[in-house]
Image 1 (cartoon, rainbow, N blue to C red):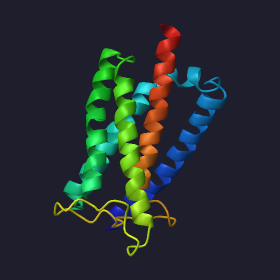
Image 2 (tube, rainbow, N blue to C red):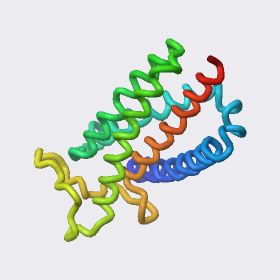
Image 3 (cartoon, rainbow, N blue to C red):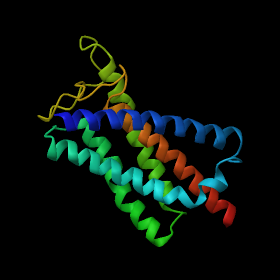
Image 4 (cartoon, rainbow, N blue to C red):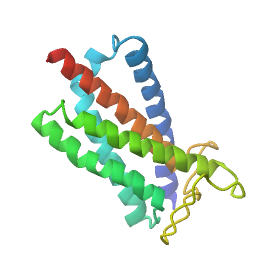
Length: 182
């Protein structure tokens, strides 16, 4: 399990870096109208989107298929939000579709973000408090179970929420770039 603990540590640190990048992108986009990042990011947007979506899919499959972790029903909902984005982002990269796909990506990412935040809140509440809604009774893992936890607050739903926020910011920059070139 040495490999698993190292992967967990890498994911936790990566999520903190991604969160810092997301905050930086959001501040630039919303407060400075993309003045600092838009031109610098232009050629890296699609590779970042593809890397983030495909990386998320690979990570979720490695944990469930290789390490044997059973995803809960809320994890499945988050997978439903990220899996199509991986396929669609590769297709959009190949076809150069910066107009339609980002809109779908934003919609899927907002859905995934909401589910991830709900699961994160459910995990952080004491078990006696319970969640706002019960976890689906489908025989899967407990949604409140923390598969890993670093620094007292980084769990899988946290990583998922940060990833969805990061993707939303990247999609907003793609749409901004498409509007500027149109």
